[in-house]
Image (cartoon, rainbow, N blue to C red; front, side, top):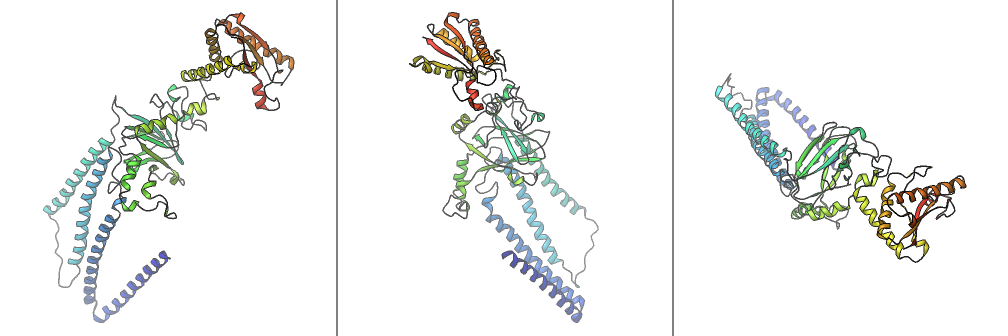
Length: 498
């Protein structure tokens, strides 16, 4: 309804102007065109002065009214250390051009009034004025030179890369239609190598899994950064031109396909501290959701955000990601909850180049688990509780040959036999009921014997062990499902004496 009324008002104004024009034409014929033209010129000149006053007042009032919403004004001081320099450069430019803006508009409309057409005034022809030429060329040139020098100085400060030996953290932002993938380094604080040719559904940024620096990198769903820490953002794109924009930190850099860019900044205000600043301004003491007046206020729901500042396609609006700036201890607590993409998605899959290797952290964790299970078995009183299944002992398909990764868990058993010199065990091989029963019996015996030979080779006395194959005769689960058959295919050891 408001829009319709506005359109009707505009239409009415146009009709009035047209009618006034017709009346003026009629008056000109009656009183003479020259006299009427002079009257029109005077009216237009007066209206121009009035427009100038209203226009400049509107600019000033609207600027003052929305002051607390602008970046760099009111509560929106920069939340990064370098941002103050950018705000200062923008303000200097704003004030310099603002003064010129006001003066030129005053002169423009004043001259339109003063030098309006009149029969009693004749224009003076001035072909050239060197002094005037110098003034209106030199003055803008000096102001422009000052702005350019100040801008270059700010640019060099803001765009400086990290220095050798400087304490900083690097993260990576990879843009695509329509979202961001953020990659953090793990404990080594180094991002691993990546290659766009390796990008796939299972490898969203093309990490090279042969580079061990990639193994601890992780990709969280939100951006969390510690306050006061220098951050270097490595920026790139998978498809089209995007832009990495953190408005509250005065960070803005294009994400260009095939050409990595970067931005370095240091956040200095936590999310909570920024909210507290906003809470002092009445503009932010309004409901965040107009439909829920009793709900949280604007300042309570404020979040820093990452946006794309390029028109990258129809889904451009969805390229938004929450950014949280937190104290160091809170950041460390968040960091401990993050899981490496490699360990959560790649480890043990067909893409894992280290499938036959255990890393030190895995060895430590699994050794602790093995020792705990063994301790329970040693204190158990029933035979079934004294039987432990090998979780990581594997054989090649259809063969009794151990895979390389089996050496680790069998090594735990070697150490356990040395630590418990009175312990004797039975090594047992089992299969499911698929295939020929005699063949299953044979391969279960062969696999148990292979484990026996491995332990003897590692120094365990043969008299402390015996090997037995039971084929499909001792299932621990149903053979009617793939999951059940997988559980029945196993190698285990049972403590006989201790």
